Image (cartoon, rainbow, N blue to C red; front, side):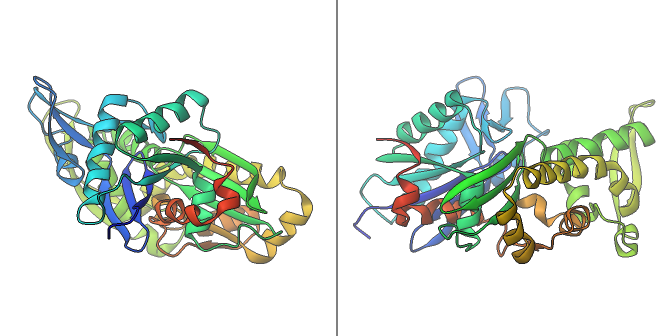
Length: 337
């Protein structure tokens, strides 16, 4: 392809995905970069870097440069973004790409400028920022430009975004910095308080994936996984068998904060749009939507049917790429060239 290359990027706290128009998702890697602290040389990026978390010698740092959906370490985030954009362009184009990056709704001006500058410095011809709920809705195939209410919930690694969209714009929204990372932390705290055993983030994430759930069902209660942590009193390794029922109790308070954000968004929504949402249901996406029982919990608490998006992890990146064909929406986005 010798024409212009357009990229949609979900620069997430936990994972970065890159969508190329006409090619689909070409990159899906953890948002982690490993750096040699002595000379700032990049050692690994993505999945290989994530494997190093908690296992590196003192001179190597495995860093997650985004926190709560925005840049926490600019230089490291820039290096990671440059790496992913470069990889996405391989064999596709000789021209600098237009890039659309998904951002949390309500992102500050300082955070926006940092992302726009990073995109330009990473090699983009023009950079746009799209709010993640809009990107999610586009990626999920919702008719966002129609005069009807569409409600989406995107539970990522650092933030949960809830929004009602109509006529190509976000009408009401809520953004809370509570998402996948907080589920991981709740599990770490639970194991520490109940068993007096300390575990790392990678172990906590594995527990969440294997047996995590937020809705009381017998099939969830019976889930089980074995882990190894460090006993606080002795400093020695200790094996534990954890069940789905106890992990639900550990993470349910975090899940209920997400539910309250959804309710808050609905309470601010005009009645006619609420009627549309009640008829059509709510779309849930993001990695957190895969947590067992999440859709059922939100449905029970709101009284509205909740549907999982197709390819929920891909929606933001896909929608970010698709918006380049939506001129009315594109014209309203923050951009730099």
